[in-house]
Length: 113
Length: 115
Image (cartoon, rainbow over all chains, first blue to last red; front, side, top):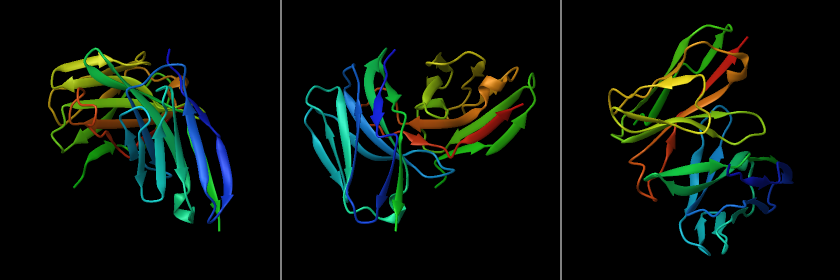
């Protein structure tokens, strides 16, 4: 089946540093989504990408839909303590009339003040 | 302003027991789904529904049943719990399954342990 490889698995960074994470797959997707999950909560959508090559920002977050449609990356600039959490990518494809999403394994981010 | 509500938040079962995880949404969304989240793995789709009266299997449906008698509710049933079903379960909903830009909203999750 389809799989997403998300890296890194975890990272410790100093407050103020920039963060970069990515997802790759052998499959092509029509959409890439990036979610953040706080402890004890469900994932919350951060950024959605719909076209190959698309670059979209949401505050300090920037994500890009890879040209090959098989990858995506998320950057966080000037990290702050509340950026702590697990970040998931998800690739979406249309199957049997509905969009189905495959999720990456997550990047656990810890920010040291 | 509830969004997607899951109950209970925590549950401990013995092997062989049955239970129902509840999920309700107040956004009039057609599409609802159940995922499980396990360490080191991404969210995996268990079952989904594109509307009242319509359900279908996802990636890991074995051991779980669902029904969708109303637009608002989408319960997940474990008929005979097994330790392999220890996981965190998330319910999600979105406006419909066809629109590429329909945002998927997740509940806060149910943490289930099967002993």
